[in-house]
Image (cartoon, rainbow, N blue to C red):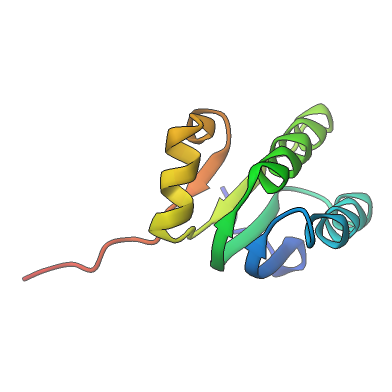
Length: 104
């Protein structure tokens, strides 16, 4: 198994909602069209995701799956993790959580 190249990473900030989802969709589609391998969405700086944002993530997940690839959500904040859990999308979407700091 090899580590993903950082060409396939999209870094999002702020709120993924009805206002920002159009630009993000365009960026994701461009990334899928011009790259190979997994598509990584870095959610570390995303404060909230609304229903439109969740819909985009699910649609992107389906599109990457059809291509034999995977959408990976990197390091979502606890608030976003809660939204994914409440909507049960954490069972569908591949989420990589930030590792918890080791305590001695």
